[in-house]
Image (cartoon, rainbow, N blue to C red; front, side, top):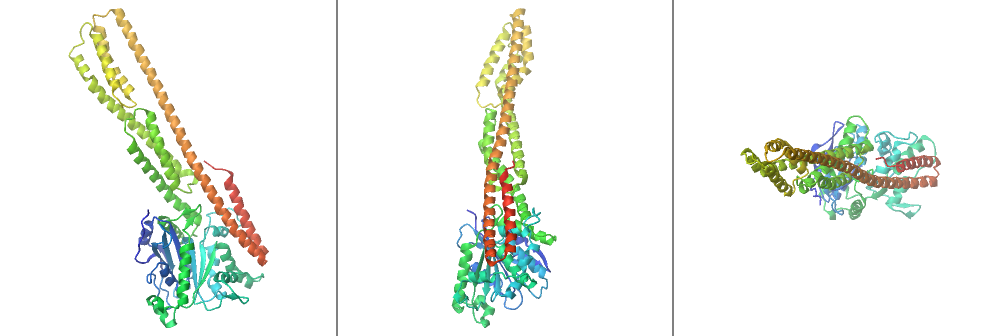
Length: 590
């Protein structure tokens, strides 16, 4: 089970110094240690609207994120607090508190827009915090949402110029939660009580008309409805009398407005139970290191003057993770082979079978750990490395067998060589005695187990190197007639030819085994890759169907409100997604 991260308080994740955003290395190091899936909740809003208080409540603490007590914005940049998730075991809740938007001291609206965009890109639940009701002023202050098409790209190169890149926003944007502070109105419409969610839905209703004023009224509402897959609203009464607000974090619960306390509890309960783990396209669950990669990719893009791009961020993450997946797979292969292989093996097939079993597990580990391996670049790299490992084991196997057999031959045939030097066989009948003794020693050698695949070849080479000794004894043995000597020479030639043919057959057999193993290895890669691509394709189709369902729901709503033109735009987006879906279903490229 992954270990939990216990941070005593928040740290700055993204610094904002003189309008320049940079990722804090110490905070990134903390993220890199979070191996659990992360549920990321980010909050944004105008400065001095009480964002930090809500985040402290989500962290289960009275203090942590700076509340401040003046009209100055206290939080600068993006601050992070990682805590164990209170209701999802083995998950980490990552809270992101952002600097207040519209800070008069900053005087840079563009900087606010980047903070707003980063909060959306990094979170799985996006909380927008504002004061009072949802009126036109509140919508005007939420102009950042209308600028997202100029701040975020879904794809590095949109395929269809007729459909805005923002059409894909809903597929990866977080849930949108609007928190209304110091809300003083009665929740009712047409004399009937309504819920906070119904109030938000009414507030996002479009007006009919084509004039500039009506378009300005509709645009932010339309963006919220189109971009975010889910919307939710919470209202909060004033927490206490104005004079106590400057020390809100010091107040006991009994000193706060009871309705406010209950409303905060409802908000926290909803966030804990409904906020989902952060995911990327392909249902890739984000953990700490993956979130770290996203932070770096987005912040670096902004710093270099580019637009943060979801597709590029995922591909950059894939490069890191797929490279690590290859190393993880190779490490597993090395471990398994190190435990199972005892060189020399009796046969080549024994070694190849061990390799194949370890290779299959290594490929499986890579497949599970990798994603978006474009053109199977990393899997091919894994295949090349595994083949090189196999070839190296084969060489080691040959050397281990050869070294062992050479030592064994020296040990077994050493006394015979000494007898030859002493002239024991330099007498009539000595040749036959030598041949008889040599055969006995060959039998002894053959009876020794686990000599490996070079046993016969090593002995053949050894005996071949001693042929001059046998020839000399044959020529000088006076007990043999010339005819007998000729017959013996022919027998030796036939024996050598038979041994050579046997070695050729053995080499051919080994080559066939290696070719068969190469084909099996390829088929194993193809099999596991095919299964993964089938799963990925099914996941992609499921995501596209979910996106289409959201767009159809919004399209129906627009039709009911009488906005045929906007409905047609949504229909174009739906058809574009369906075309992509059909192209992705046509084939699996191996």
